[in-house]
Amino acid sequence: MKRAALVMFGLLLWGAARVPAEHALFITRVQSHLLSVPVDLSLREQLSQTGFVALLSGFRSLAADLLFIKAHIAWERTEWGRVLILFRQATTLQPRAVLFWDMAAWHMAWNASAAAARDPAQPRLALRIKAEHEYWDIGRDFLERGIKNNPDRPELLEALARLYRDKYKDHLRAAEYFDKAAGKPGAHSYTRRFAAYELSYCEGREQEAYDRLSRLYQAGGQERLPTLISRLKFLEDKLNLPLDQRIPETAR
Image (tube, rainbow, N blue to C red):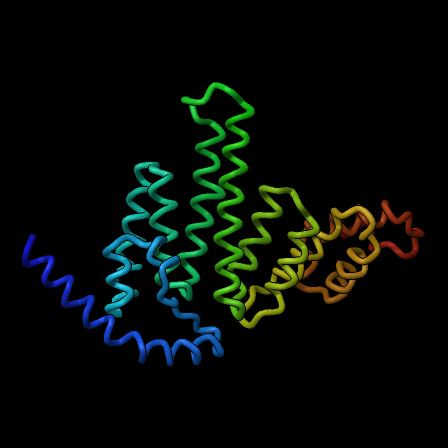
């Protein structure tokens, strides 16, 4: 124990000596969206002692990877509180690791929420639903903070769109975030189409959704998918379009 304490103390001194130099690099990283982790008391409260020493010592990546592995093990054991704590620490240490934010949100908004919804230890349905929705909110928080730290990436925007679509049933927000994802380099080709799908479910936005889906349909080829055609047919009826302006019935 004495030896371990000496090693930890040495790492702490070495890390503390590097803080002024790393602070100068922090400004450059912020300007490039390569957000580092500012060292302050609030951060110390979020991390375990080992994590904080790793931060000062320059071992953030290794410590974050270990926390990620521990979070996976905790998930296998369905220890949801521990999963949450470990992912909060991992994302704090490595805010530019998109996978960490994405997996944290998935475990909370999908896995933990599903477990809460059918928790046999909670006989009251209302409380199970409340717990389920709270996990949705935790997952959303992970994604929103991940997006702030990775504004140039489409993955988390798309994940947030799916969360609004599949859990909150908020089609307008889903359309908004699919659109944002589509505007980022490296976005999947389907995200713009998914944005139009979601817009087609929004009361008062039918004409806009129809125009967008029509443009995709006119592009032909792989865009003429069953879901796109189905939503177009729905909007044609909703907008009461003349028969000569509708897509062919054979397109069903």
